Amino acid sequence: MSTNVYDILLERGFIEQTTHEQEIRELLGKEKVTFYIGFDATADSLTAGHFLTVMAMMHMQRAGHRPIALLGGGTTMIGDPSGKSDMRTIMTRETIQHNADCFYQQLSRFINFDNDNAIIANNADWLLELNYVEFLREVGVHFSVNKMLTADCYKQRMEKGLTFFEFNYMLMQSYDFLKLNQMYGCSLELGGNDQWSNILGGVDLIRRKEGKPAFGLTFKLLTTSEGIKMGKTMKGAVWLDPEKTSPYEFYQYWRNIEDVKVEECLGLLTFLPMDEVRRLGALEGSEINHAKEVLAYEITKIVHGEEEAMKAQEAARALFGGNMKTDDMPTTTYSAEQFNEGIDLITLLVDAKLAASRSDARRNITQGGVSVNDVKVTEFDRVFTPNDFNTDGALLVKKGKKAYHLIKIAE
Image (cartoon, rainbow, N blue to C red; front, side, top):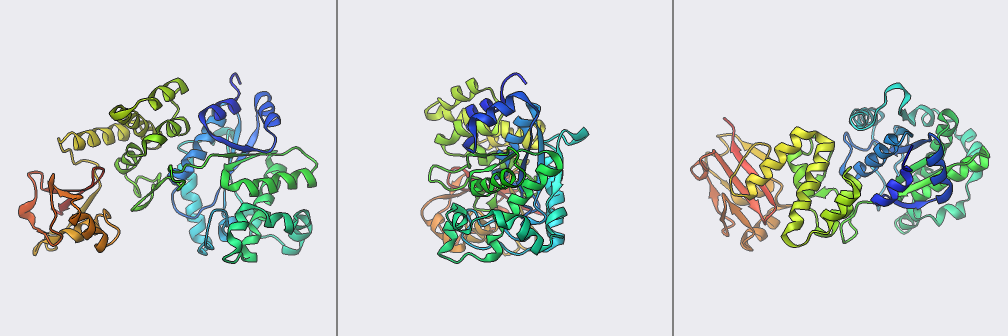
């Protein structure tokens, strides 16, 4: 291990908080460390928000360390209150298991699980058959309720009402770290900064119960300049599954991020050398668009492969260059019968998810923010028929400069 991965993560902007900074750095520099990151299986795909932690895992594995991807088959049944204003929807065991299987398939594209280079584990294996009284005697005695109530993840839920159901989450996540320590010699837990309180719980539990060193480290959360979590669009989350967010839409999300976030995302979400990251991040005016293209291409290449990244880039350049190339664009297809009477523009905008509601669509149209086939349309009751389609047999609906959608009729 030549360059210490701690220094790489620090320089690239990952590290937010650590339990024992100097000890963690020394440990990562001198031996192969088994570490873990938990993924609660709340959906059937990882999101752009998860991607930052996946990148950190890749850096760690490249430096010779051993990742454990812990799928939360057990903890997902409770729900982490961290950063949430409401209690998580209760899911069935079958749905959670299906989601966990999907996570494993996706993680396998980024992490090498062969020959014990990484471990996949599922906390359902030890949490779902726990004897509650034994658990309280073994784990609960090490937790102070007074101290737990000062944790940020609980404080923001106190006003609305924190259930005892969720209050157990910190104990369960801490127990996960203890089990992974006992089973695999795992000594380091990594996670987003919203996991800080839970990670501290696990570090403290291992040190008290096992008398062994244990460490925690948290990453920066990807947020907009207003502090809102990145990875959300009007359609919802930006997914890593190409069936849920197409490579084209994925590319466009990163191509359209705020100027002030370009350098940060290049550092966190690509493997470009930091000299290049700083050079691109320093570009100003219209030149920053080149940096955004590089960012979108590099992230899409890691997630979807080089071929899909090139296709997405070409399609985006063609669209904004006025030379419309319709392959891979977000598309809604109607049957010929649906277009018999024509379809009004408000319906097209709502169906394409370019507007959140009919009133939102009407407002955008009357304010001059909508164009069809590059012609601005300000009449909200305008109806389109097949006669309005361009020579490619499509309508290109744009909202503003960056949101667009292709409308087609099924052949």
